[in-house]
Length: 203
Image 1 (tube, one colour):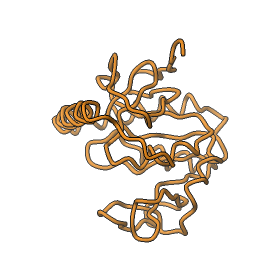
Image 2 (cartoon, rainbow, N blue to C red):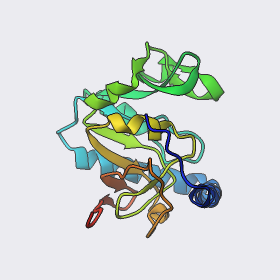
Image 3 (cartoon, rainbow, N blue to C red):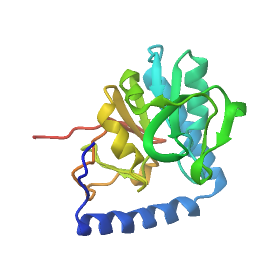
């Protein structure tokens, strides 16, 4: 994988924006959060319709993040194999996946992050996912994504061949973002009020 990194100014701008968005998320009431999660889940599943991909890659949300657990449950119930991030060799340094087998088959991985109990699959397993649900803190209509800051998805997304979707709140779709050499655009953004198909514009 490439060793490219953000330049100092871009990295600092990203850090500042992450702080602002996390504070805003934490300030949302539980009622508003639940309503947004339900609307966003219904919107995405309506878009998928009866054409659920055989394999979906997703992530387990935590804290004030847009909820992904209901999506995972319902996509799995529809027959999809759902892959979730997994640790390899006791760390998150090397991207890996494991199959979702239900909420009672999770364990605490490194850094206290939950992961499936099953055997780890290589990062390249992402290539078989027809749909990839990406975490993030903000996105633009051009498909730019502000990640959570750990870099895990930056390392694994080069294997993606399926459609990339970003789960956000409505106020997290903004006009522009600081971006770096490893940032990959998403194909669509799903919020409680809309599914925005991203248009990168002229190359």
